[in-house]
Image (cartoon, rainbow, N blue to C red; front, side, top):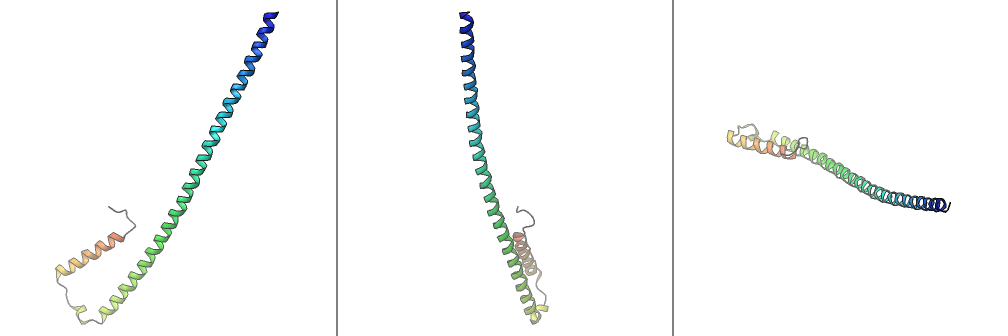
Length: 119
């Protein structure tokens, strides 16, 4: 009977030690997961702040683009009005000069065109 009591006590002790060990491991895992969740939450908040800043930059750029487009239209209207009253406006422009001006204007439009990605 003494062996049985010793084995029973040993079994209980081993069970308690195993239970404590498992509980401690679970506690450590929980602590690790909470730390990882905290870090991920911080990263998400940083990304959200970056998104807000980038959206504001985009909105500001769009507003600047509209203002520049409006200014360009105003200037073009002024130029057109001035050309109406200019005697030389009806004269032919030499082809090399007109081609050069056309290509320059085309390149300027392409460099400010945001609808297609830059090459």
